[in-house]
Image: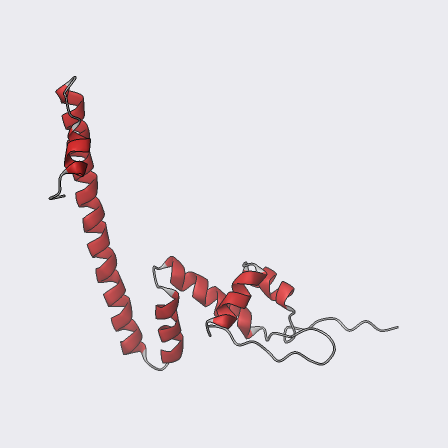
Length: 139
C-alpha cells in the first residue's frame, strides 16, 4: 500500500496554519474578508492550499506588526509588486501617523507625570488633582 505524502502544493488548513504560525480561525477570517483565497472543496476530502498561501499569511502578519490595518494590507496586496511608489507613499503615511501617535502618547505621559507630582506634593488636599482634572468639563 502506497501512502501519498503531501507536497508543497497541497496543504490542508491545519498544515497551512502551522506553517504560517497562525490558528485555523485566522485563516478562515482572512478568507471571509478577502485577504486569502479559499480553494474549492473537492467532493471528497479536504481543501488544499497552495504553498504561496503561507507566504501571503506571513506577509499579512509582518504588515500588521508594522502597524498596517487589515484594510490597508488589502490595499497593499491589490497594488502588488509593480507599484513601489504607491506602496512607499502608504508606508510614509503610516510612519507619519505613528509619529503623531508617539507625540500624543508622550504628551499624555508628561501630563500624567505632572498630575502624579501634584498629588505627591499636595499632601492631604481636599480634592485629588487627578480627579479634579478628569472631572473638569474642559478636559
